Amino acid sequence: MKKKINVGIKKSIMERLNKTNQENYSSQETFNREEAYIRAEKKLKELKGFYWHLFWYAAVNIFLWVSIIRNLDADESFFQYGHFATAFFWGIGVFFHWFGVFGKHFSFSKDWEKRKIQEFLDKENNL
Image 1: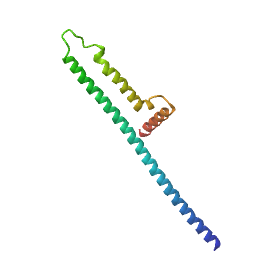
Image 2: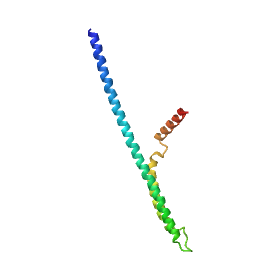
Image 3: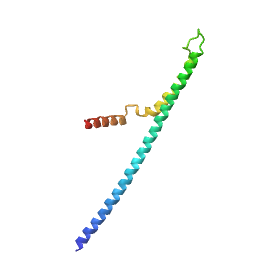
């Protein structure tokens, strides 16, 4: 009789431990998903910011160049330093913005190698 009680108690304790572990795993999994969502949302905001920056760079420079061309004198050349200064210096800013968004993952680091290997494995497994 004593053995049956001990087995029952052990079984009850194990069930409670398993339930607690499942709850902890579930909450940890939920936390990881939320954290991944926050990182993805931040990356999306960075990408949107860069693309808007690129859009305004192109739009403003096209507007400036069209205005310059329309106001050129008959003997004046379009190819002058002043006509390209805004595009050049703002282009440096766009480059650094690009590097801030994409440059982190641009180098061939160990993380990049791991991601590429995983990508190749995933493609191979989908065949």
